Length: 495
Image (cartoon, rainbow, N blue to C red; front, side, top):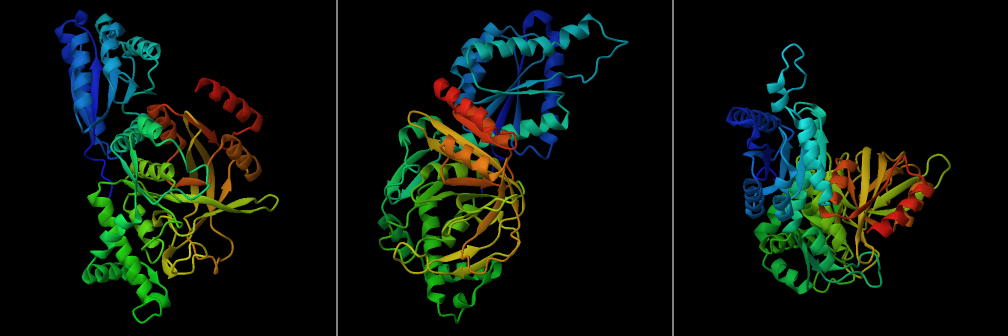
């Protein structure tokens, strides 16, 4: 499972020696209090470390260099308590390779009208100290998040929490490894891409492995391991009659369990964070990994079908962002439409591999023919996704640059049962509506594969795209097609 609690964000306060040691001691004390308050908030899972007050160019450059080499440091928070001349920050910011959040706050929430004097004014200068710092960041063309408000404000804390989760995902991706088990599905365009550019932008490496590499791990699975996993299946899911102990397809369940154990061992020993497979390359496997891919996703691994390594990596990244939050994130595909005036909808699904973290009710373990691929019937988990607000996100290679496309949706419960549909699925209403939403998605070049999220808002993905410096196109209730076309043309020129 994903644990972001080991990650650290360094809190650094800017000042200068002009105000004397008494003021600097107060600046340090206020910083310590703010950091303790943030760490005491249960929403923020990462650890925020007080790294003190910096007052010279040498101190600033040194702390930035040290943070670069600290493996648990995923980012920094900068705050200018007093005026901190921004030329001091140039060299430090130029060498810094960690993302940072600029917290524009002040220690006091209110002006002490009857007591305020010049000493108070000299101490509490964030209003223009942070503007000086903001200028140099803009002059250096540095992407960063700016959060404005008092440090005890719940909305400020929420934004810091979101950014800390995104920084955790960014940190995870920088050392991520995607295993492509087999190649991309033949002749498909959108799942292809520049793996070198992806590593430059996102940090993760993408490499191919033969199915035979996986087969060796499956062969090493013992009968005892297989039986223990089947016991877990039976205690967790509703098992179809065919797969029960005396069922006619019990052997297929045993094969599926061996595939899951072998695939899990392959992932762990290779330190992989994401993987792909394709039904066109199954040599030596009895069935396409269905329940195996679903359950490994539920443990935090990224996955996408047909060799789609970009979506697999994105699923992992979004799972890290959402660690510990209610709801789930899953590989998804826009599968088929329900065109009916006033209630146009999308049924999202995939052949097998939808993560049970998004389930809204009972999860059934079933076996059905796949219909393509020419292999034995695969075991899979079947369920309906929970109703509620959600989004779909896709990363596509536009040739020389990456683009993220995001569409906000509302997941609903199907009005009727789906007794003959042998896959997990989600039914949603598109924002602003299906006709304009799908038109916007297609104009933006969004893929048919996505990461479907129940617990991440647009702010998470906006922050992430800022961190990795890629384009983001958001389709929501405010989307206007003419405005979108202009945005795409402008973005094309800019990037």
